Length: 292
Image 1 (tube, rainbow, N blue to C red):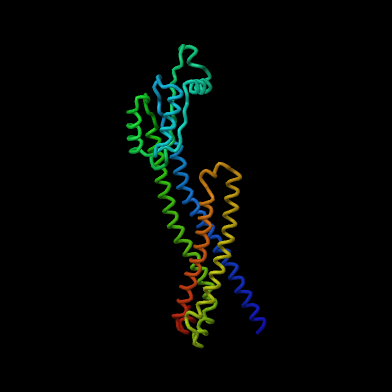
Image 2: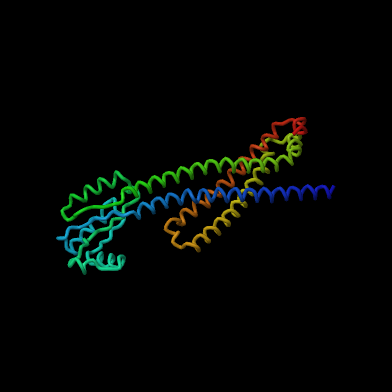
């Protein structure tokens, strides 16, 4: 009798370890997907906010007027930042890029002073850029406004496609993950189906029978979530070590939200699958238990 209990306990312990490992792997995948979905939003904003609008100033505008104008534009609701590039600075930059100074054979500085505007992500689209450009051109201090409209459209289109692909992957992986965890939990409960039937025969309520299974499932979900968070934290550290600039896209908010999502998924999925599996065997008669 003691030996049989030992063997049964050993099998149950092995099932718990197997269930914990499989759940951890599923939660790591779900956590990665949540992480990429949240980071994609920041990446979209980061890319859009780094697309610039070049405001070319008239030759009559002095440096003091240009600096004052930069302050005015920086205060507008659509501007995230503004940089002033003087005629001399533009000349030096172009000479360094071309390897020759055009003013040496032209006899004058052909470059104009410019203001480089970085827009907020919500305004980095075709319609907003058109009315922003039209408003800027009305200013007598502005000679012209230039921006890469085709590049802006391409960026927005590619980001939209990327978001749709991530959403489709999220739905697919959620279904697959639920199916895998549900199958594993059902196998674990299946091995104790006769114990469930025995408890039902002696008059135990369904809630009383379900309680230890739910408690065990929630405990396994928490442990699996902790392991998954450790794995995801290690991957995030490796990503930061490889590319420190990633902090511009991945912040502590995304990491915290991913961790919370992993814990919620782990507890909810395990509890739900355990409840469904136990209820299935509670509804079965003794004859049906022997047939499955």
